[in-house]
Length: 307
Image (cartoon, rainbow, N blue to C red; front, side):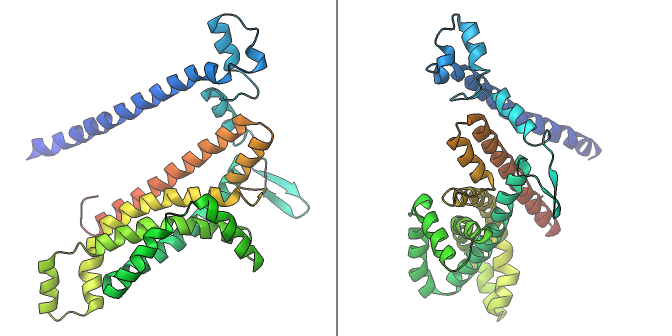
């Protein structure tokens, strides 16, 4: 028994190392392909027209000021300069405020809309799933509309939402949050309908034998059975919510947010700025996913399951 307990940390350590190797390998392969692709993607630029020699051409392609495809190190340098290399706060007549030149300021604007939209979408999705589970009429009437709602391209509906809410005085955070909620509620609804329906039939019969009410059956049986489905849906939903917040910033001509950063970069041909904003969005998505995974582990551990 002692030998088995002593061996388990070593097994876990080897499992962690084994999981890291494929990730590092794929990442290195992507970086190599990215560096190699810089020359053909930028070959038509005037700076490369008269450059001779493959090595020299790659050296120029990796150092262009406004490339079609920037090199990875250019994106990382821009990401550093626009975050750590730029003051986060600036002094104004109203006191210290966030500096709009810092990429973290734009990340926070997008993140705030993402979190509000995700919260709205999660509550809406769980509420719809509970209603559908307890009413066959709602299941037959709502589910087709819920599925059909996701067939509309978000780029088409986002301007409509922004204009409609703007006409009643709702601007800024609210329209972006609504777009995020529109995207994020769907996976939660579908996942929770599946999860709330996953309770064992014999256990449901046992609850009926005990004459348990619907609320008791829900809290003691259906909800615990649905939690794994809920967290799987939340992981998908929170990433989609971030996409919705960025898309919501594009049609408005917003001055703040990662979407605004993408727009300004495209207007002025600052492709390195565009890529740094994309990297920041990916970092935010990874952090949000990590938080969702942490919440899942803590919840399962509190319930006595495997974390």
